[in-house]
Image (tube, each protein chain N blue to C red):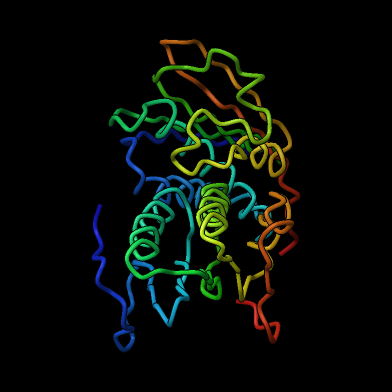
Length: 142
Length: 125
């Protein structure tokens, strides 16, 4: 089975719930377990929150999520056209945050990596950031 | 930002997405919402920090009994309140934590500094 979707929305924090619930709805056709859905929702929430806080620094612009189901693989791309990340490796280090004053724990990428099978970040300063995540969904028997 | 700062008393069946805060002596009890993310955590932090300032709080108890979703923003919320309480000689606890939230708390390492009680009675869902 192959299926694709695209979702574009404003970078406001109320849309964090909208984004993860929509992605959860998209993946239901893969017959995921409750835990797999929760894993994906957490990862999406982290990527979208990063785009809002760090990518756009609180300004309202567009965030794009492209989702793709290919057999038992779910691929998600969360893209912003914000400031970008000068040092992706550093940004992905656990506990590293550029915004400690905002109560950021520095664990966003840690959670994405813990809950998805693959996480890749493409970023260019001044151009934006794309987080590409993949997860294999072990389809449940009915 | 919406939500009022004045919701100290629980009004009967006060439903809705806002967190419910209650002050007893110097303890602030916070009913964490169903989904704890950057959006809801920011609202809680603003309200809690105001109460800590005005009501001389020395303990914050986060009640997770109704919470089924938590991401790293929830960890930031807990660690931030922990630091504030530590500076005041107070403490922070998390109670009635369900499986999924516990997994997040475990993974983050926050349980090393903040006491966490699991949900009692095993009544998940």
